[in-house]
Amino acid sequence: MNREQISALAHADHPIKSPLDDDSVRRLLERGLPRGNERVLDLGCGGGEWLLRALAMHPQVHAEGVDISEEALAQARQAAARLDVQDRLVLHHQETASFSAPRPFDLVLSVGAAHAFGGLLPTLAAARKHLAPGGHVLIGDGFWDREPAPEAVEMLGDFADLATTMDRVTADGWTPVHGHVSTRSELDDYEWSCWGSLASWALDHPADPDSSQLLETAATRRSEWLRVYRDTWGFVCLVLRHTSG
Image (cartoon, rainbow, N blue to C red; front, top):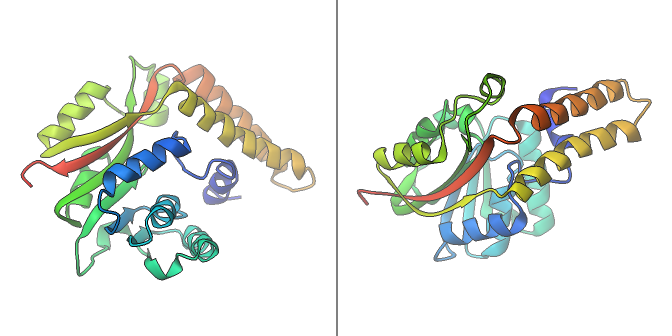
């Protein structure tokens, strides 16, 4: 079973692939869509969860998503059809770096995908290329809530603390107009859900050749969370506007 399939199983009960609950997602989208008729782009959209919610919230929103996973895009199309929003959604199967569009977007999203761009600031640079004047960027990434263990840095990456993260964002020419730091409940719910869903699938399919490996993976990831980074890692989402306008 490949990494994408494992991720799909882990997120079966937590479709937003970041530690955010439904109310937090809704509030962030409301701040990024003040008019309700915006054009929205998600760079690294996966299964399109953010775009689908934006489309369901506002019947005049139009959205596009870019991702390299054909399987995830197929899931997004199926979900869009179930919600009857497929006429307002365009999906592109390609690398985000090579994506171009004839018109800019009012909201550019990239939550939990900064690793694909090489970090937070490169993700903002990619978003800026597609942003209309006066538009918003909604971005989400990790930070260190306190000094991490070396094992945590090796496992999750070289994040900064929250204050330093904000300094880097503002120095890059952005002004935060809203933000949300994931609560302990959101962080814990996300981890319990992911590794619990994976373990449940393995227990429900004992004859599957991947079952024992998935059960072991769930146990390993749960232990890493509890022992290595639970008390030090945080997640922040920012709604940004370009400072120069």
